[in-house]
Image 1: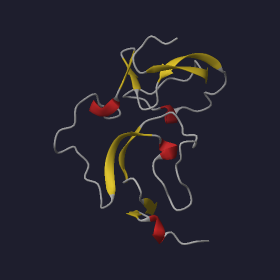
Image 2 (image 1 turned 30 degrees about the vertical axis):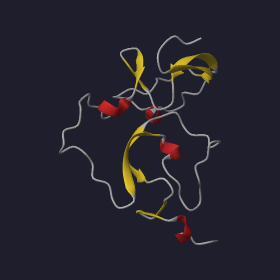
Image 3 (image 1 turned 90 degrees about the horizontal axis):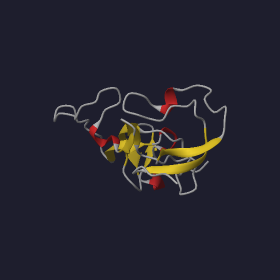
Image 4 (image 1 turned 45 degrees about the horizontal axis):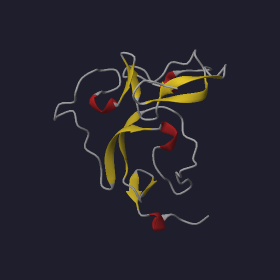
Length: 134
């Protein structure tokens, strides 16, 4: 049983793979899935800082600071800024919908994504009815 807040048991993780933290993303690793052990890891959407699993909301990757008002990214029409999304499950597209059973990488990226109910076509977030049937 995991005693730390925002931790959960993972039945298959590799101890030679580092967890996400505010200066490192799991996506930077290569060939780390060499073992399959069970143990405690941070829940999805949380990062390990000083041994604790916390929300990355107050951190930018690589810089441990709160953003100033001039640092806040302005998103386009139909977009919202997210502080933590899985790189493989960032948003819906015409060819792929994210569902509750979609397998997503355990990492945490930040940036503008399409608002719920919209899909990305090219660089724009639009209603799914604009997807062309193929």
